[in-house]
Length: 184
Ligand code: SF4
Ligand code: SF4
Image (cartoon, rainbow, N blue to C red):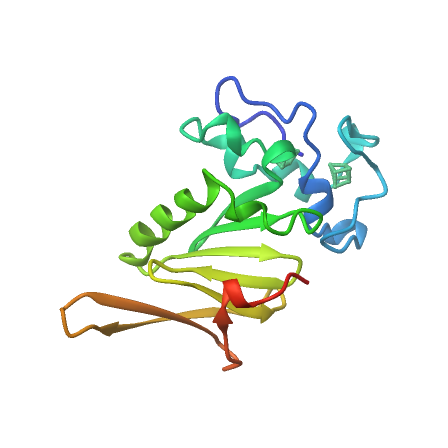
């Protein structure tokens, strides 16, 4: 949960506490995917004035992006958008593992992917440790990956001249089509 510094006009965490569940908080040794012991789901933080620095500094994508519709409000979308150095990661509540497949989220992720890949940036979905790379032609389920593991995007040229993208894990483990894989 964030301080007000870079929050978009009209936006506030309000009843949302989703990042207090889906993200890891190192200072509290809280793993991702489990509620923080200080969270009051739907109401806020029991130690708000003393919360750790990483909580103060965190701003989810919805909070800082006035262009994102209200449908992306994490408490209802069940998706915490994170703008990371090499693109966007959509962290999904494992209690609703398919939330990212619903409209308008999936279509927006695809649109971002097509635009970002042209600049060597990535759009990833994470459900727990399961990582899915969103690509224009497919969604590549890369399986269980730790937070420090990297995704490699490779390109190839189709006979038509079209650029094709494929994703793989930096450790070389195979991926599969996300539609064929099971939620964790
Ligand atoms: S996910 Fe975003 S809106 Fe929700 S509590 Fe965290 S920072 Fe606030
Ligand atoms: S300390 Fe407060 S703001 Fe930080 S994760 Fe826990 S409940 Fe959320």
